[in-house]
Structures are given as C-alpha cells and as structure tokens.
Amino acid sequence: MSEHVFKRHNKSLLLYHLVCPIKYRRDVLSEFVEKSLVEVCENISERYEIHFIEIGADENHVHFLIQSVPKISVEIIVRTVKSITAKEIFRLHPEVKNKLWGGNFWTSGY
Image (cartoon, rainbow, N blue to C red):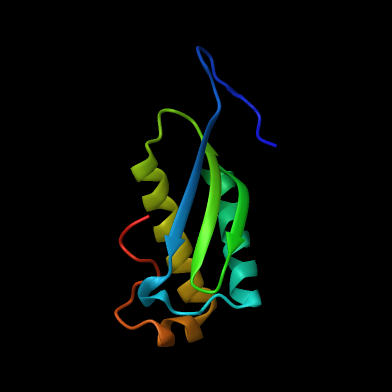
C-alpha cells in the first residue's frame, strides 16, 4: 500500500492510474519484455520521484499505478515513463522494434 510523502512543508498522497496502449495495439509484451519493463521502471524510481506501486501488462497495453509528488505534473510523469521505457525496450529487445514500424513503442495518448 502507498504511504504519504512527507516534504519540508507539505504532506501528499497522489496516486495516478495510467493506461498506456502499445502502438498499433500490437501484441509485443511477452514475458521477457514485461520483465524488462518492470526492471526499467524500477530504475526510473531510483532516479526520479516517481514510484511504481503496481505494473500490470496485457498483450497490448500496460497499467501503471504511480505515486509522485505535487511538483511533478502528470504530463511530465507520462513523458518520462513512456520515453525511457520505450528506449530501453527497443535497446534490450530489438525484435520488438521489428514488429512496430515507425520507431514508436507507445501510442500518443494515455
């Protein structure tokens, strides 16, 4: 369960449930790709104030339950998560890039 985030002058509990579809709704999230996605998200948590409470993946979309601080907007959270995960998945699993033409992993929305 998530906990309150205590800063010097505030206390917050912000949770975001984001659903991010894969480009063209392709079924590219195999067991190995999903494991890599979770590892990449753990690395994001270490570098940014974005904490992943849960990550659930279907064949063509991913559910993120994210906790963050008020100074980071939802747009910045989504941009950070989607850009870093896409670059790392393409680097670690080149077979995924062959299934998705155009160089995009995620759709433009969330």
